[in-house]
Image 1 (cartoon, rainbow, N blue to C red):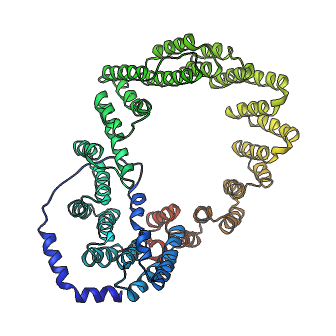
Image 2: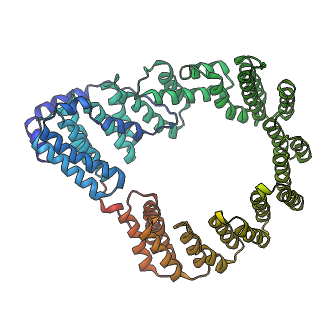
Image 3: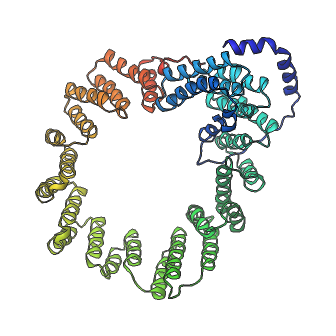
Length: 565
């Protein structure tokens, strides 16, 4: 990059001064972990935007060139092709060549660096891009972002010691910036692999209680508080867990206590050594929930709220593995607010989940909506593998509930399929084709998949051809042809998917390679796998092809043709 090289040649003194300052930093070792719902890339992408205020400071010619670069960058994010990333990088470089003293120069340099990362030129991005932003534009917003990107890029390269050091630099130099929070989050992801629980808790506390929450950092802090609460729940410490959740949920705290306590309670009560602790925690939580809302009154709002909290209490009791507690709570709820079909469905389903089928069926038969109750009775027979009883009920329903005849016949067919009676299921599906013409495609697909499951592959292919859900029908037809060792026919179908479905093309190209292998055609197979790597380098199927080429053929290829640094 001509403009960067020019800056480097005229500011080596500045670089040396900064280098000396960097060497004098105090080393601080922080190791901690929590699993984030929002990954580093998602948060970091907010850092690669320039404010409207700064855009307004640009001259029209500067905005024009920068918009060109931005357009190709966004296209690269959409297509993930080397060609678009190279074009974006070239346009940012052009901007720097023309307007190296512009307000947007550090921004363009940072975006050029990000494009280099996408091109797998990570070392170039770090040394010639991000570090130059920090050295030559230390007061720019991009300096903090670039410091973070250096650490994150090292992390993506697997250079963990370098990434830790770089993240610590972020914490030292930009402690008040959002990137410091992201650095803590990323360090925690590294520490998660190292299983350093003590540091996890230390940093969860820091993010939960000590970090100012802004628009850019709130999600990180909320997730930390959730993780901290989960940790304390696993220790049976209700008060500490609640305190952590209170920092994030000023309203509806009881719901989040219920939500995050369930898995820890289940784990604790599933172990003989910690069962007592889990039971105690369960009782504490249910007591807290019971006190959180007023008792049910005649008001519909109060009744609905009381009912919902009761369901939370019952679920927590279920997680504590005390079935009688669950049953007693359902009965108390019924006595308090009366029976309704939703409540009965929950109680009956609980019995069925415990394989107490007759008790469950006795509850389902109390439904006000008799048909829905009978449907659940039939479902319990299916769970118990009593097909004849289930079929009898579905036929009874189809005869008495003509308005929903299609639904009941469909359930009858599904019951047959569950135990491998495909011929009986197919016969019902063909009947449904006649009486439910508006859903022809649904029933054709059911017939095709039933034939496929039954091993009637030629019949399945014939019906799949009548289906209109391309490319899924082509995928299934190709599978049938391969099972029949009709590999040429399968290849034709896969090639049609490659040409006709952008989203499924990488998968289909990978299958072409596997199909050639089944034909013992080594060279075409290799070419097919290489094509996946070249055409869709960022796709997960390219990674699969890349690994297969290395493992089976000892061939090393670079995804997309980029040179890894």
